[in-house]
Image 1 (cartoon, rainbow, N blue to C red):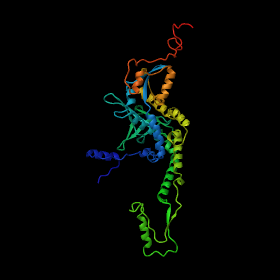
Image 2 (cartoon, rainbow, N blue to C red):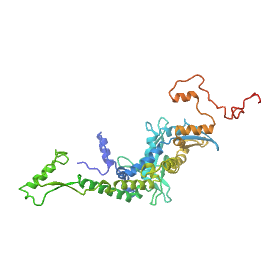
Image 3 (tube, one colour):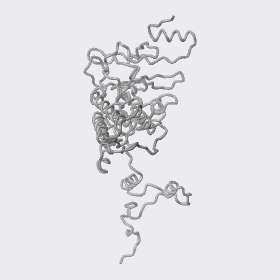
Length: 415
């Protein structure tokens, strides 16, 4: 019999025999046990409120594109699209989209209060970013809380140390020793546990409560049951239950029996919807998201529209700024020269653009004239081009060429 003390020994044994087998995730090493008081993965899987709020934030943050700019002077800048930094922002790893990559990074940040990326140049000279899952890594800090080591647990259970200089990382505030942050789920743990117990109770009520509001009444003066008479009658009733074979058929009662109304519970008596909404609201508030944006609280058109306007400012702005600053202080100096004066910035304006009608109104107000040629508009309407339609028309009542209005015609005879 072969025995193994660690997953590393098992992995070596399997490799020596060319065996292909999936080794379970070793999880958190015992040396790091205690840095988290809750099972974040289980809560994310079982708590709809956590999944709803964190998914909302991660989805919106990950869809904001990251652009690279060169600072020309204090008032001018130019977008850079061909630098290694710009290429890695568009595609962090081969065949991995930026949305998927940054969504996973944000989920690490939201669930574990820390995230870590490793930057590296591949053999072909391409700059790539590798995400280290938060569940597999821990930060080691010195006496004043500065991160001096990133400890990563591999699939075989061994621990690898990574120099923080090779990483882009960020972590939230922690009152414990070390620097691994405090997951918001820990703060919400008691509330989520209460919600889980309420769900169990409501499910138990649904399972044990009467499914039909009727009972079979047998008169007291009826002749006594014969041998096995009561058991035979109950077995007959079982045929009318689910899977009995007579669901929905007529129920034949014995002489003197009748159906009566039963006081059955109503779904609203369990306060199911109220409990779900309350949990959604508490979780949304913990992540500083207006409950109206995730549908946890009913709002009017005006205040929901106002919340949407502040979505990429007060709501998601702090997350965006945190990632921007981490990239600009930890990655940009490593892959570009100081004289390049490059920096990374979220293109928030791409997400804050209004509808086409709003853009058209604002554009015409700012420019003071139409912003489309006739052929450009016909192309949007799937119509063919016309001759002379490539010139931008300027209305005669617009102040251009020294004329303030159509009545200012040169050479007009005086009346």
